[in-house]
Amino acid sequence: MKLQLILGAAAVALAASHDDNDDTPLPVILWHGLGDDATGEGVLQVGELADEINPGTFFYPINLSKDGASSDRSETFFGNVSDQVSRVCETLAAHPILSTAPAVDAIGFSQGGQFLRGYIERCNKPPVRSLVTFGSQHNGITEFKDCAPSDFLCKGAMAVLRYNVWGSYAQSSIVPAQYYRPTEDYNSYLESSSFLADINNERKDKNAQYKKNLAGLTKFVMYQFANDTVVIPKESSWFDEIVDGERVVLRKRNIYREDWIGLRELDQKGALVFKSIVGEHMRIGEETLRDAIKSYFGPMNRQFDAQEPAVSEDDIVDEL
Image: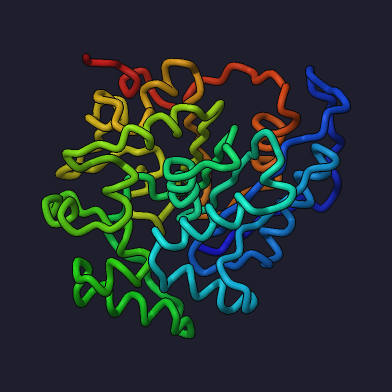
């Protein structure tokens, strides 16, 4: 989903942080969402904001195409996600600045959030320190988005999805199909999902490296849009699941209890953060972005403030 950054009319004065120093901030990488591209105005404004808050920040928006914005946007609908993640792994590992940094910080917009998680689990070179995701489909989607009347790329992709979502073509070539996860057809998902079932370690054979890599994050921050009607269910952005109309929160799910990908380990060390934003999908206010950048990015040796997940007491009860 294309980012709609809500910028304030006047500049906001920056307060010095408690660990203000002359150290160079870590680079920031960003993976944009469905229908967007790396040169979009909203994406580039994030880079400007990161540099304003932490002067000297090197900003790298992930671009899947060398043929311009149109091709990059096309790859958000059509492509093999595992291949895309592999290409990003190779590109970042060979980048003259990113490859020499001690770590990077990362922002994932919508589907870019779970794709960055795939990068962390599968390669993570350079390693990610803080991962911040906005409206990402970490636990998949159960419905597909409606397309604008003139958005023929979207319409083409959705037509294939509705015809045969578990077919080899859809699972290798249609991006949203690769994180489709219907609870009522879970066995088909486990058998056929080419991306999400793997990075969520949902199959019998678990990849221990995935857990090790993700658990190595210093912060994993997940923003959910309270009024999201694009991502269904919106609770997927917190790894929550909807079963028979009832919400099952992350801490009551096996992916957490059995710690398939390191979420429990992250939680136990205070690195797992849940946040909610009032508004529709990818409607992000400037102050929200400022807070995220100031709170979780910056120099390598900065100290992070303790944060609590924005969930109710009932949600955080551990029933082990």
